[in-house]
Image (cartoon, rainbow, N blue to C red):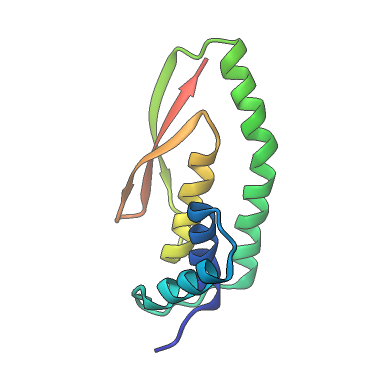
Length: 126
């Protein structure tokens, strides 16, 4: 069984965010759980794709603050649900990060992922 190191890092990051504990015991538990969880089929993911999505997540932080301030001071009474196409040849880990990125900002949330390659995104608009 081959373990994808990027998926392992993603699982550990999620574990540490959920537990907020970097003690040695929690690290051992997190690594154990990350290794025990099913790996699924092995797919090639390039480091470039991971770096691109992680840079987009970091860039979304100021955008999230800006959107939160806009929602506080200006009413957003309109809602829309739009479909967005998943980028071709996305692995499950990258699809998860795409959904995280969309949901990270206050005005959008993914309400459904369609196995045919579409996200349903709920938008709050002015």
